[in-house]
Image (tube, rainbow, N blue to C red; front, side, top):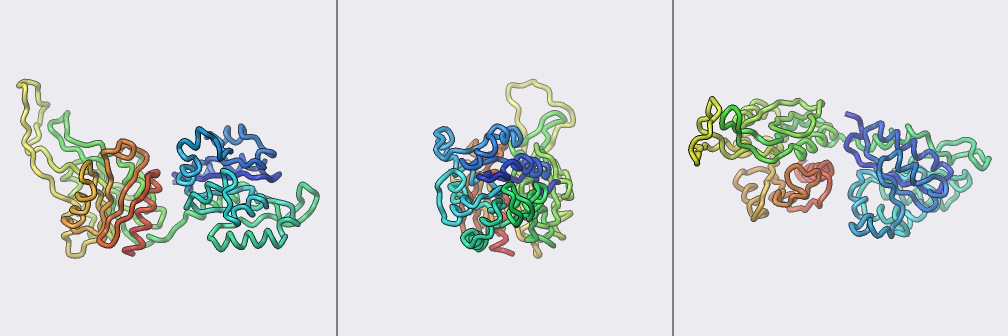
Length: 397
């Protein structure tokens, strides 16, 4: 997997002659697997066109805080939520000063204030401007707020001066972006994650299942691996590609998944039960296709073993996170599941909402433990997974 696979990078292009490098920066980020959207400031538009940035990024370029169409959906808020990292390259002296002052005077600065994404800036300007005390004070201020400053190169500049202020090469900028996502928070941890929809056969042709796609579970697999964990993925029916850095074990039925989990559970630090396991299976699946005959067909069902509850009963159980997919009385049902199954945390997911339910690329959940209840606002499933893990790590590790 490329280092920026599934990562959303918002590139801010401000007023500097170095803006001509922006298309190459986009390409280098894409080469590392990133999805890139661009915000072009008024100053940046004097040096490079919206069309060229759109052609390379393959996304609409945003440039106007007062765009009626975009702001119907609160565009600056949505872009802030979308971004995993905001990179300003080139970052002019003016945009650096505005950010340091906390201004929201245009689309880019408004997005920065409305986002909790990591901020990176690559200053590019005349050498005298760069070494001015005002500019250095602003960079110090931003650095203290945890912004990452990419040091400019030294050399001949467009104005003829020689000194610090040149924008570094695009591949170096992209590699520094990639380094921001390397985490060791789960290094040394063994994590088992179940995902997908189990399949319970009725006969060789038909089966009982559900709408789970495996997208939320795979997002957690990807995030755990990125944070340094050794991940075992026990998967049923899924519509997403497997992460080849995980140890992948297929288990299509509830009984098969129960067996696969208990074959692996002794070595695990954390168990995350995301799979939508059928509560019931056919008592006696037909060995041949059932032919249509009577108007009614009665199927005898038997209850599947509860994987999460059984893991939580172990004497040396791992830390356990369950998922609660609900359509009514959601919060009450999720809290009951937390108590009855004796797991450490439950992630409540309201699947009655089609926008965040099964097969959606987005989700909105509530993290529930004995000590807290945190709403995680609607976002991409990869960002939801990151937030779930951050909350869990803070409370339990």
